[in-house]
Length: 122
Image (tube, rainbow, N blue to C red; front, side, top):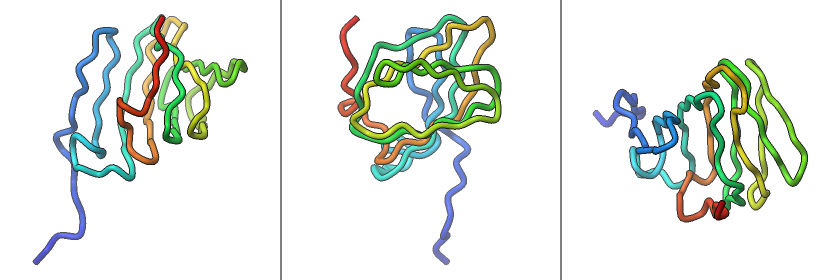
């Protein structure tokens, strides 16, 4: 019998140099799915990424802590229980300038692809 589901017990841990934990559960490196990716992340205090303009939409749900988004020049802070959808081809910077870690889930559609993030040089 062919299973019509997939339980993910072994996410791909993306190597980082900034202290951020990225566990991709579904997406290109784990399940070969290029349509959608789902990742569990923990951003440490005082963490940030460069501005980027991804070719995919990204949904973020905050589990704990706070996360800051600068979207097309507007600064937004989300807290536990809040979520956001950011359209593709939108200039955004993600950061956690706060004293507590931020744990969240990220869903990208189509799937996260580093070649389609378009991060700016610092």
